[in-house]
Image 1 (cartoon, helix red, strand yellow):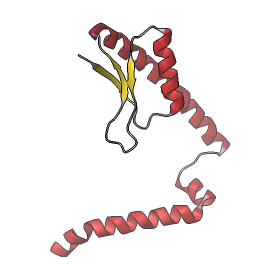
Image 2 (cartoon, rainbow, N blue to C red; image 1 turned 90 degrees about the vertical axis):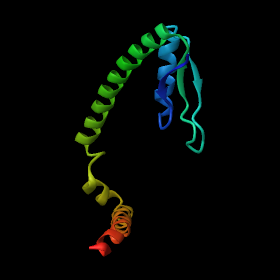
Image 3 (tube, rainbow, N blue to C red; image 1 turned 120 degrees about the vertical axis):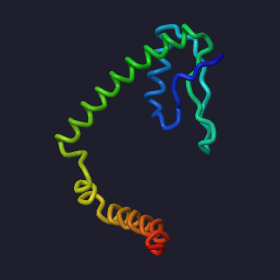
Image 4 (cartoon, rainbow, N blue to C red; image 1 turned 180 degrees about the vertical axis):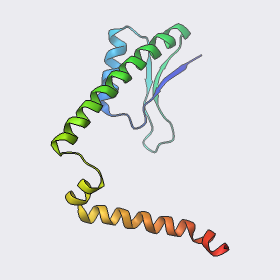
Length: 120
């Protein structure tokens, strides 16, 4: 029975390439299904064998731990240099876009809550 190892929806291309290389390096017999354009099918990496699935999951777990640490370091470095920030950074860099997004959030929340406010 096939074992689904990882969903490929919203996975960056560089991460997918690194996982393919990892599986090739460790001779994991896997196959891949691409995610659909419209988000109907998730796509992913798959294996048929139970033992292979266990080995591949262990490799993926270690890879994802290392990737998280690397991405965290990159984020902290960018944040320390001022390239990345919170809402104040976004407001400074793109004020119109940020204010429009905040306004849209308030409008959508208001329209969503309006029926409940009228009940009371």
